[in-house]
Amino acid sequence: QDLYRKVRSILNKLTPQKFDTLIQQVHDLSIDTEEKLKGCIKLIFEKAIGEPSYSIAYAQMAKSLNNLRVHMDEQPSETVTFRKLLLNQCQKEFEKDKLEEIDLEKMTLQIEQSTSEKEKLQLTEAKQQAENVAKRRSIGNIRFIGELYKLKMLTDNIMFECINRLLKYSNDEDNVECLCRLLITIGFDLDNANPLSKQRLNQTFEELKSISYSKSISSRIKFMIQDVLELRENDWVPRREDTQPKLIEQIHKEA
Image (cartoon, rainbow, N blue to C red; front, side, top):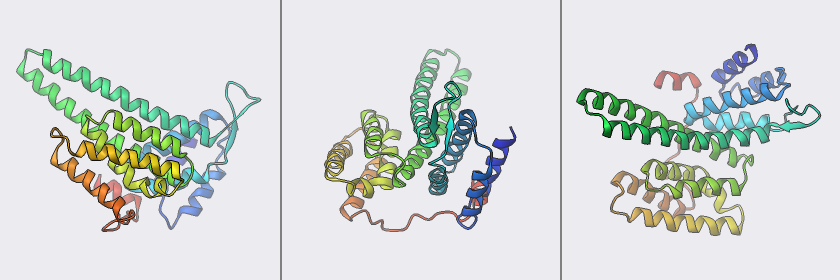
């Protein structure tokens, strides 16, 4: 569709220097139905997840569309906001993570049941590739959700739901890595939001410490947890600045 082609083109050009001009171009587009708005949100999500180092810019774009309101497809007399549809998309991404976990479990079972060494090798390679894709998506999704929270588009409660879900499945190291990355993104804001959030964050950090003592966890994840613990002790001031790419084109070249 022409609308989605234009949105993709704008997203590909998104840089801090061109931000205001490109945002105005999005506002000038005819995004006047629920279906169109959902489609645009999905495109923003896909770009943010695929290019996590630029998630701040995509989150800012989402923020600029926050007040957009359209009539609902099934109930034309009612309206739905960009923010509501964005929350739905966040939920869908988490559900997608669960489905990917189920698919990977099925692939593991297929490998175990296979009697052919050649087939086992092919299935193992396919599973490894699927795991890498799933991991990249999870990390991209978590980072984008974190940036949306920092822009006050998501609540403390939603963030703790994400944190608790990752802790619940902490036997999977990918989830612990995602949690560490999320805390690096939003830890300062949660720590300073209100006394209840600080208290809940204290509990999160106690659980993280417990995970780091586990003998089954890899050294890489232990060091990652240690970095997050030290970051909080240092009032969330990183030892080095997280560099942001200047141009989207650079990311495409590196990918």
